[in-house]
Length: 562
Ligand code: ATP
Ligand code: MG
Image (cartoon, rainbow, N blue to C red; front, side, top):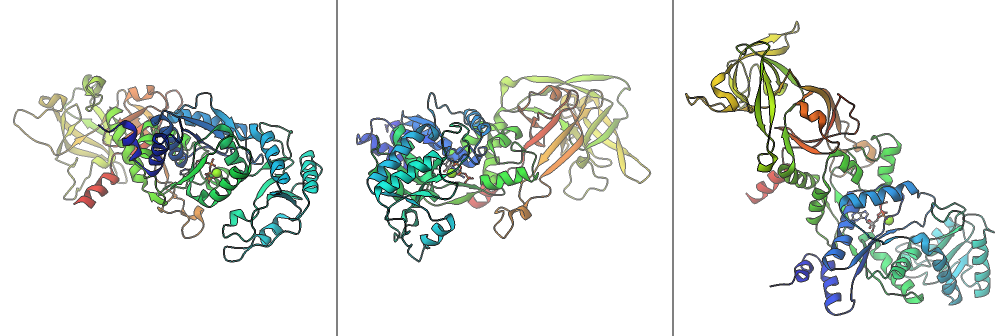
């Protein structure tokens, strides 16, 4: 039998590397980290990185740290730190005692910067940001040395210490590594290691007015924490030579290795914090947890279970080429899980009244409805049947086309768990609109069973009773962006889907739905999966549609195989 780790190793190239390192004895144990910058909320792209880092640590009996990459005080806030912790926990992962902050290493990083200066490997540059950019050259042109590159060590040390003391204004000086201005890799053309920012930091307060750049902080934080495998997305591939250069030239306590993998791109949405911030700021969505947002809080509020996200992420390829994944795959994972776990309820989104002429007036009866046909243990519940009920407006057509099998004048259908009913007439308003149906029912079909004469019907409709239905709002969501690749042809905001939210305010719900716990998924029969939103008020439930029932992903797969 293959051992468990061998099986895991076969899943992707990173697990293969980890397995190899452990079996060769290169490491006794592995340590990974998930390193968010606390400048926004986590999105489903981050979930790929979280599941990879925590997943690998779990599978190979290692550890995974949560490290806040908090080196830029301008955009970072405490609020985000707390929210990120909550979201990672919600997703199902635990960092134990290992929540760390790059800001805790500021003193050590500063000492290492002086170490580089003393070794002649870093210098203080007085060029402006614009000049630095011009001197850096381009992909096709080599860069040029700064006139300050040859400053003596003592002068560099003096200036850098005075930078720290706060003697200079923002942007007047930076510390740069002295590597190679002609390198084919622009990241090696004397990258900036420290910049002056007179800005209080959410954690270190006013202690610092110089802050390390991502490149200087990241690898060294990895080394301090004993990270063995530093996993990041492909855009950092070109930074790896710098990562290695710094590790090589600094007296760091361990030798982490960086590996890059493909980031998640998802169709019909964006996974860029910059754009997500803009959507919130411009009021295009109702906050970070708007159920249309690809943020973990948005997905959670919409009713997507953490387990469905883990399942989805587990199906993604961990490779060296970026691609885009269909939103339909995520929806498929959600349906597959909720089909097993969500209890069924009946709810009418666009009600049409039905009066059952031959049902005794004023009376009602209780019928039994199964909670989840996929789960015997879910049991059943009583539902009220009465003379006046509501069905879905779209389940009736006065002049039905050929393939419409639901209710129409003269036609008989089954009401789920109740009776067969036949449409014998319509009630219309002054404009000729059908406002109610007159029907008769067959008492011999109680529970929805076929009558003794063996009559068949072609449709089963869901319904609610006017005696106890609760009125509520249902928010139906569609893709946030109309096209699969928003922004590909210009302004991304132009591609927002104007119909991404349809709010139905006159829905009628089975009474138990009013007592649903917030966020707990239920299936509305024949409609999809929904959950109660926190906007609900007593007696006024609000539901979010998590996902409809139609599985475009499964259909697509079936078509491809055919
Ligand atoms: P953005 O580019 O949207 O600002 P970011 O990548 O800068 O996001 P970080 O907080 O730095 O956000 O990300 C934390 C970790 O999550 C990083 O290791 C990053 O590579 C990873 N990550 C971010 N977006 C994705 C994605 N779409 N797919 C996979 N991993 C991602
Ligand atoms: Mg980043």
